[in-house]
Image (cartoon, rainbow, N blue to C red; front, side):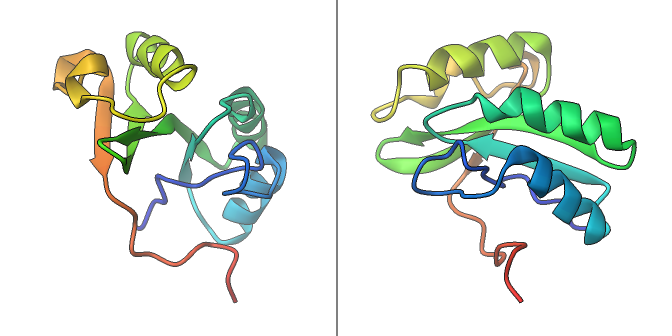
Length: 126
């Protein structure tokens, strides 16, 4: 089963337009059992996304942030509370020139890195 790991909400200014709650509703309607949100610029939608997903009882929330590494987008998926702290710290101030080793991508770092854009079309098309 396909799981989108790089969805953006309206908190990704200029890149996303939908509310975290609407994103959860749409994902459930499409039959998703899990969904990853990796907003850019502002991670304020993450708590709303997690709350909506958990409240629905039908969608497992996966969270992270999209940062720029050497000028290219890279999504960092949170795996542990420690990883969440690292992503929040990096996402609040770093937008370019980040070395992946700054926040870590080893299995024990609590973060999984996804480099490059997904070739899958957005879930809102069609």
